[in-house]
Length: 235
Image (tube, rainbow, N blue to C red; front, top):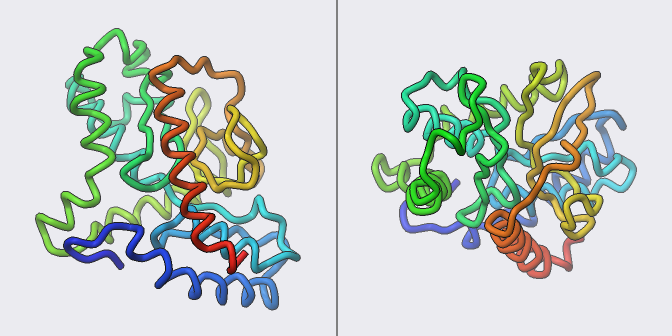
């Protein structure tokens, strides 16, 4: 796990071999329909390593967790608008579970009202996005340990939605293998907005992406490429 002063990249080499072994073990022993959620950082690339080492299990069965980021983004928007978190729908986390992630509220609603009608763009760029991006590091600095309980709760929510479905009119964020959706390089484990039903997930299609969002989606994609290139020998 991360400790004070550690960035996720410090964990990349250390954890990469662990997830290579885990992927091989799953390939040897797990059901072909197993649902895998990787939480250990760097989660997206660790999921990529595990999937690559489990060639007999469909890649789509491997996911990484951005639900904690999703929940943090919801909490920030709810607090800013004076609403309960349950009033916020259609929040999106794009990309990597890292400080480059892009929390996107352009499609979100709060109590049925479009979120962008309720908040200022300056707040989005200067407070909302960096607060969500840096929340994990801030918690480690404050308490000397990671937010393990919040991560555990988010993992339960991730698996519950994957298994039992998402609420009507809402979606969740999951890091999943890209098939090129929204122009993201195929094969990267990238967080998308998804709808779950029948034990499967589907990327929310045809969302309008403005230039502000597109730039941030590419930045986090670039980081995922760099992480992948750093562990190619394990793929």
